[in-house]
Length: 116
Image 1 (tube, rainbow, N blue to C red):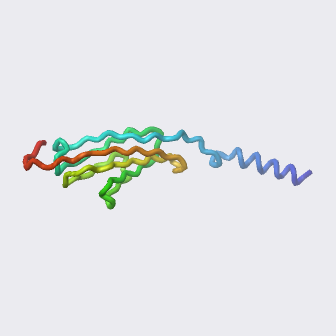
Image 2: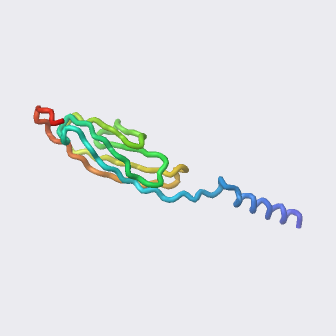
Image 3: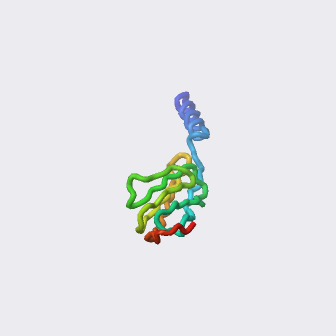
């Protein structure tokens, strides 16, 4: 009887401890793309994060495999024309839940003039 009571106490404490249950809402991942130079190379692209219920972020750029960011809002320079995929992953604080969004940006061939 004493062992059953001790086991019951342990279970009550285990499920009452606030760190044992995380009621984190699932995040959404979304962003807006702004660029200098009207998307003509070279240009700087600003990524404005519109995600919800997220704690941390990971940005990646394809085919630029060595370029990534963990900033909330990212900035990346594109020096050559081409089509690039931008991926945002938004994580909850526990990193157990995440969402992603992928958008494509087309960087146009430079006209030789600055369009700022």
